[in-house]
Length: 481
Image 1 (cartoon, rainbow, N blue to C red):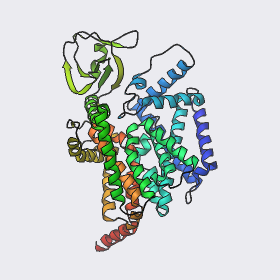
Image 2 (image 1 turned 135 degrees about the horizontal axis):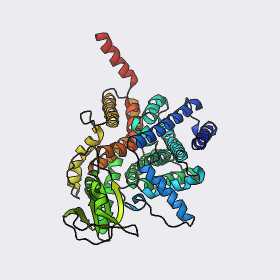
Image 3 (image 1 turned 90 degrees about the vertical axis):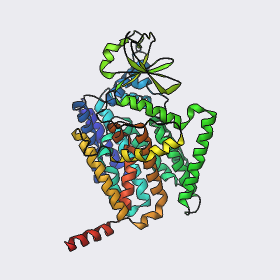
Image 4 (image 1 turned 180 degrees about the vertical axis):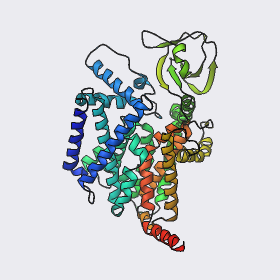
């Protein structure tokens, strides 16, 4: 039954692919689409095998076990203790919302009867729908570039890997793709009631999964809404005006509500991330946020009956005041008797990039942006590889640089007729890469977090490459030899 039930669900989803109009794509047979879904499932089970046998566990184990606890608590069973994923970082706009994915897993318990493989099948089908929706959104504007888009959306190793597990990335890819599909990159002029509702629904879903992705989409969507309702001229200027207005409004909000200042939120996130990259256990009281060495957690933390923890007398740890996360205090020989709630724990990262501490001002943010973008684009490099997974990521980065080179030197001028879509994709990539690079010192984290931008980036690069120009250049070089 452990394998029979997920197999039956996989067959059900394949049946739906053959029957649903959504999967009718001119020039792409249902057999090929089914093959793409099977490839997605293979990636999903490969993801599970790698995490189970190479890393022993992952976030998905926590989400799944917490979903069982949630179901039991709803049914009125004795209250159990959730992991840190349920309460940790809840409400922090620069973190993904773990509660959302736990609730989704709890709903899936109705269909899985506690079978984790069923969750894997469901997550893969939803993320596959998102990739297909994104593919159809691009094909609508570039029908003559189907093959390029197919490669740029379905066959990116990082996207296949990270969007195929029972993780936020799978839900994000599904919701993001469907939002782009129903809004047509913000270019749809006339919304039906269905399209309008679904576009809003999936945008809200994106915000619930990873709020910062939703924030990054807002100026891009608004810009394209304006472009679609005005002339095609001065598209870049219209984008620039929208960004300036949003920056101005953000400044006003920061003055009125300093706690919502985006630059303060980003600098605070960076301060936490730098500490987290070294691994550790993070706990919180009414006034303090503390870090305890991951390897010493069992000897320092004393569990209490109410699921809180006390700090063993004489211990050492790092401490921050909740109202000032920028100032770090190193506590030695602690006499603290407070009770601390466990927020989350982080295994030490394998590869870390030293980040310059960000001050919460525009000058510091802008000066750090180019290097941040560069790090996310090229890390990990082949010179930093420590294991075979990093090797695959470094090869993918080299391939990305190669395609950027081809797009720059063999670009297709006709693609610029849809410059608003290219602007959308490149700006989304730029903004996300900069945000990740500024706030993420862990190279592994960079590889994972940049995944949502990669289908947009690769699809745009493949669209830009003029194959006729490239063939002529290769023929000339061959003839010359």
